[in-house]
Image (cartoon, rainbow, N blue to C red):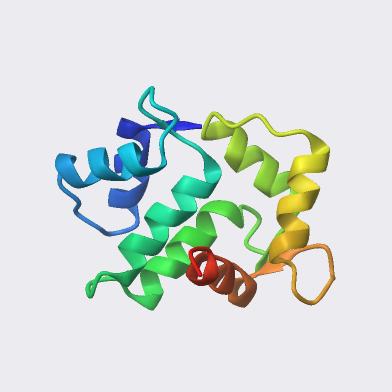
Length: 125
């Protein structure tokens, strides 16, 4: 889980400039009632930001780079676990593996950029 301030920081890091009210609305829509947002709600927030006209391919690449820490072009389970832990979301190995499986369309055990983008853009459909 990440709190409202952390959500705002991440969204701003990705090049968006949401108002505090917009961040608050995102937190209220997908939060736990205590001002924190889970991973699914974070993806929803990123999708909403991506749909804004100012969102670019470069911003999606920056979001991917947050997870692809070794710059390999893919996100593996250790990278996902590390980033999610830093967002305050302690996941079991099984939860991390499930997240990778959901996004990993080619079955190689890792999530590449195209799979990452499809996961973000199809989350609400």
